[in-house]
Image (cartoon, rainbow, N blue to C red):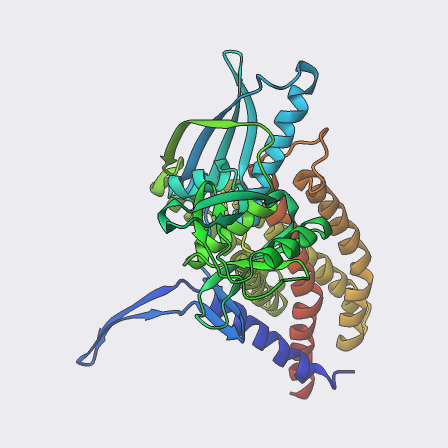
Length: 448
């Protein structure tokens, strides 16, 4: 029955080790002095930076904290609805909010809080971006329209009198935009894919301008003017503008998200400090650690070696969950921490159900191996039903389909996301990790 146990334990160890590498802080100070040996060093974990030909994966594993824990950017935009019919104003506002939210989500900011607000008869959009300290970067991302135009150069006898004339090929002909790296220079470029109609326009435009520069104008500024070597078909192009990777990413996001449906004007901007304060955060973390320590003591006192195995499972659970928060990434807020702690309680509850069933089976005089397998199998139905009910609740709170009759604020979604992730990981650790650790414990007891 336990022949593949070694492979499973090895898999658990490797998974835990990799999750631990991701979960550890970037800088770990090591200071101690003993037997005449003084050590004062800081271990630094390097960020992930891998290249596969033209593709490059660059990620840091810093834990992203929400507006209430670490602060961020707070922006207020006022809308101009003067040219919108009264019956269409609400729809225009909702469309504006959706476009801004889509831009923010594409940029990789989790848990943004974007709301429509009325102030003295004026409609405003309030944007809260946790972890974004550079307000100018946030304004550029949210408020700019990113108008893209391809132009022709009309040459004159005097080169100074040459004119740049916009063509019919614009950002409206785009099917999609992305980020890649130039094969020659290695610098980031923005790749463009046109619609069928746009591809035909682009082919005609390049055919007319062979040997001439083809200016690419973004927001009334020329970012590139490549010389056309031949007619380009297929509907693909790229913008070379000496971009940094972040600039290229931001531009592709704006082009993909589309233009804002109504004009907006920034009326307020500020960087927001952590509303809870550093002292409150420390107290919250300390309270959480004390609570988890009490759970550890309770499990050992009431269940002995079984409780010790459950505690090891909880340590693995916490490490895997924190690693997921960093990999996805999830912006952690105070409601998010509450969701994590609630999932810890659900993980402990699963172990208690299994251990109580195990005690009942042992009381009948059943041998250890059969009692263990039976307790897991019979407790599974209760564990499954409880966790499915919680996952359904988390789905409703997260509201991923943006149903209008449900709440959709960032903090509520943050609670739901951390709770759902915690439940998923607790099912894995409770059913797979703890079960195999208990099998190892029983195997050692039988061998003695």
